[in-house]
Image (tube, rainbow, N blue to C red):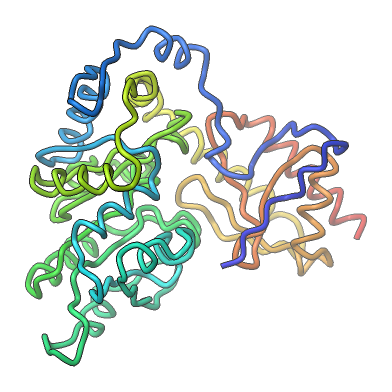
Length: 355
């Protein structure tokens, strides 16, 4: 999986438009104030009231029994598979899923698991593809333990898994003894875009998590939810992977603030992504995947400009994007305005005309 951010030359033009990722968001002044005034305690012994509040709210939001605050979404995924699986077990996921492409082989390195990549367009596999990948229980085959989906599918273009497909995959998994895990890095983008609430979106899935450091604008953190027994196991793996974060309420307060103030506004990011895609589509030779959420993938090759050159030329003009899997990815977020989108389209037009 190819992911190359634009070079960060200290002598380069300062970044004015940062479309590299929604992880580039900065906490707002009001979020910083919430962090500064947060009530805190020792998370390790359950004595941080702000962490406890955040976990209770996410568990309620996702319709699960319990939740735990983690430093990152990757740690949520890793701790989940370590809780579900034993060495030699098999996990099923789309070939472009984050747990395969973006987590440094952690699941194999730490747990000895194999992840079987499933095919399918736009970062998703169908229920039929999942069913066909299942095999009878046999001592000759690895135990198939978990099926994982990524909502939204990043490399697929920020696409949203349909609830009917999620429900059917979960049904098939349960009938065959597999646990179900949802990588919810941009889950709330999906709920805002579809109008389906998070509890319904994750129904039938044993575990799911929310990343607060992407479009929700917090500086750190993910929260994974599931059954009480599962969360006990995740806590054990959190301890093994580094332990608690002690007075973590300072960070958790940013996440609570995001739940209160930054969820509905994700619709603005989606609108900006559509505007960006619309503007780019009007340029001859620029191939654009129409966005479902806040990610816009495009190729300028047909206009006589390679993706690498386009990214480099935009960087010279103060616009930061990334090459990902052979395409350019632009990601709208809290710190990207409609005016910035318009400026970006104009600069792409300028570069294409000069090709």
